[in-house]
Image 1 (cartoon, chains in turn purple, orange):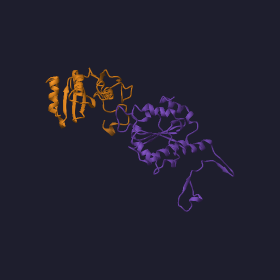
Image 2 (cartoon, helix red, strand yellow):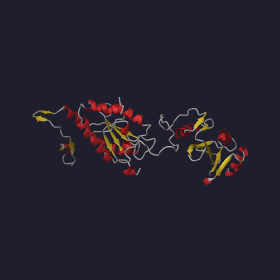
Image 3 (cartoon, chains in turn green, cyan):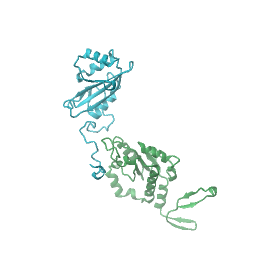
Image 4 (spheres, chains in turn purple, green):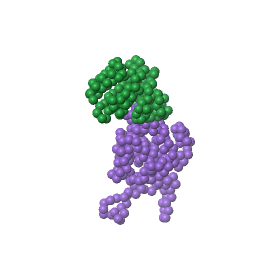
Length: 192
Length: 165
């Protein structure tokens, strides 16, 4: 990341970090790189998360969203409460078996490309709720990209998880979602 | 209204041997009654002189070792005027888990009977809508019956080395 100090902030000690341009050819008046890299860059810094919060992890996420930890620093300024406009499904909290079809439906309503972050022990594995009523990890119904462990995880961990998703988004091939592997993955979850 | 007066009134109406296991833990009169008496008894408690107009709660219970008394229902009633409470239990065989519904006496019994059905498989004859209330609709067992392992058997991350299974 390159650091530049705009004139308005000069002297105040504040700094604004700019994202470095992807690898490419640069010359007088032009810059050439691959479309994939530009799109990955754009996607990774404008992930719209859909917070699916069911319990205490949701409270930690609220802190993450708030001004102190400020998830919008990472381009997730707008939590999307409609799955159709969301890029990232953040499942936070215990998912009861009765809630499982709802989570799956929300995932199915999201448009590609879509990522899933599973936050906390309950969403990842059922956590302490090793019981008849609780889904033993959301990866039993939908594919998960990033697991954030903890009970509940601290906001820093959520931010770290989000940065992992950014990393995935940045480096994802444009053809990945059309690949037979990806189709097979979805098919293994019986999605569309 | 004293527990003594309560018990005398109930015995005068239903006979001396209608109630067994009479206890007063923390001053709360607790009786066990015959299942056949349920409707008559509840009607008497609510509409009669005793005035137990409020059904505080009810729940099912399972004692798998009590032969022919494996399943039970427990009712808590409250007289709001004299601030008196009473607890009533009844037990029946697990192979015959049928109780009369109290929804005609207390509308609030509706959801609680659905809960007892959901978790213990007790069916309430005359209930207007006896379906599961809390668990998934397609569940094919009654989870609070003590017939099942406590932990979810499909779980893979808990191994002997960590949890001593």
